[in-house]
Length: 92
Image (cartoon, rainbow, N blue to C red; front, side, top):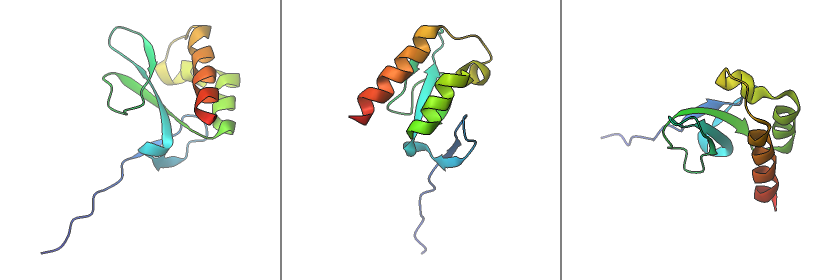
C-alpha cells in the first residue's frame, strides 16, 4: 500500500494575490449575524478573507481598505482598527 500524504489547503491573500498554506494566513470572517471577527481556528462559520501575516500585506490592506472589496460592502472603521490592533498584538 502507498502512504497517503495529506494535502495542505492553499488560500489566496487578498492583498498580494499569492497562494499560501492556509495556516500561514490571517483569516477575517463575517459570520451569519454580520459581525466581523478574527478567526484563529480557521473553521469559523461564515464568509472569510485571507491576508498574509507579513506586515506589508496587513498595512496595504488597511491603507487601501481591501476588506471592503473582499466582502462587497463598506466595513466600519472599527473593523480596520481591530485588524491593526490584532496584528500589532500578534507581532509582540
